[in-house]
Amino acid sequence: MQHDHREQLKRSWQANAEAWAAAVREQRIESRRLVTDAAILRAILAMSPQRVLDIGCGEGWLCRGLAAHGIESVGVDASAPLIEAARAAGKAQYRVCGYAELESQADLLGCFELLVCNFALLEEPLAPILETLHSLLVPGGSLLIQTLHPWSSRGAGPYQDGWRIETFEGFGEGFQEPMPWFFRTLESWLALLHETGWRLQWMQEPLHPDSEQPVSLLLLLDSARR
Image 1 (spheres, rainbow, N blue to C red):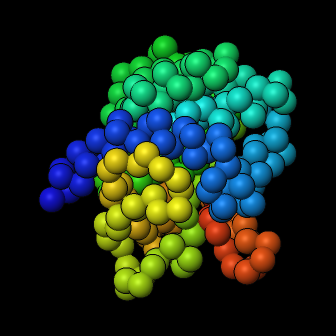
Image 2: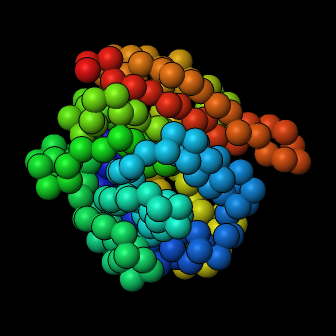
C-alpha cells in the first residue's frame, strides 16, 4: 500500500505540473498568498544565507524570490515538467532530482548554508532523506521545514499519523490526479527529526490574518552530528 501511495504521489506531480505552476503564479492558493509564502521567505532572509538548496522546488517561485534578494539558490525536484517550468521562468540553477538521488548527486550539488523543504516532505518514509541532508550542509548550516500545521490540516479524521488525499479543490482548473500525502502529528514530527539527528532551534506557527488560526508549521533545525 505504501508503494502504491508513493507511485500515485509521483504521478500526481507529473500530471498536475502545468496546473500547479499556474495556481502558484496566479496566486490562487489563499494560504500561500496570505501567509505561507511570506513566512518562508521572511525566515530565510532573516538568516542571510549565501547559498540555499530548495528541496522539492516545484515551479521555482522560491528560488526566484531569493534571487531577487541576491541569494544564490539551487532547486531540485523529482518532477521533470516542474523543473522545465522553473527553468523557463528564471535563471536559478535547477536539477531533476528525487529524494533518493540526493546522496548520489551530493558532489554535483555541493554544500549549503541552508536547506529548505517548503511543503515538500509528503512521503511516509522520511528518515532516509533526513539522514542524507546532513551531508549537504556546511558546518553551522541549518535545515528549514515548512509543512501544513498538524492541528489545522487534520481534517475530519483522527489526530494520528496516516495517509490523506489532496484533491486540489479551489486551486483552479487543470488538476488531473489527486495527491496522497502522509499526515504527521506534531509529536511525530519532533520525534522523527530527533531520531534523524536534527536539533530544533525554533518553531513558528504562522496564523491566518482573518481566522487567527495556524496555517503552517515552520521548523528551523541544525545538525546534531556536526
